[in-house]
Image 1 (cartoon, each protein chain N blue to C red):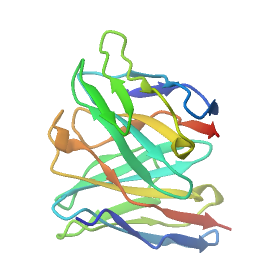
Image 2 (image 1 turned 180 degrees about the horizontal axis):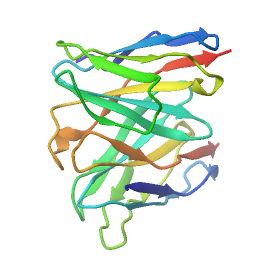
Image 3 (image 1 turned 90 degrees about the vertical axis):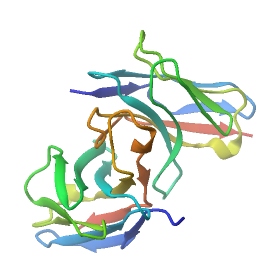
Image 4 (image 1 turned 90 degrees about the horizontal axis):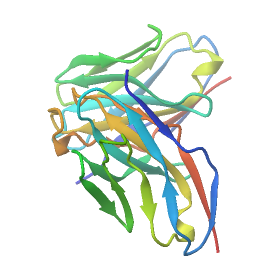
Length: 117
Length: 112
């Protein structure tokens, strides 16, 4: 079974621009989560989508948004980019979650490396 | 809120040495616990997991036991290899099953 795929793998943008990242989950997985990884802040949760609905959101400004499509693919968008948005953005997918169920395991993609100049 | 604390690195070991990376957590309820590994330039790979107290997760010679009494999930390996050099993250899954909280990561360097 193919793993989580993310496109593009690398992006270079300038301040003020916007960017869209894409994530395709493992076939059959309906939950998609996004995380930001930076050297200073580590791994931080952005948001999670299930059946096209955002169910949970981390503590990020409104410039960060996302959506999920009916085929479970997800996109995240960052508008008005700032230097501090440079990071590795990781997407993870899981089977429909229920608390404590082993199927909750989140499987990660390779990430998109965003550099803001 | 939930939090995970793991020992800071880097941890430098010789090949075949014993490895322990400490991880403690704070959470409500009974979260599932995970260890992920990240190799340079890659995403996170699931190493092992445990979903309830006293469970032992194991994979590729790594082990970790879910200790609710000490709120810990320490990672161990009896004999490390150079190929184990990577960054290791301890994480817990919230009760809703839709958000991971990560520790800061521990870089392991294994020298031949």
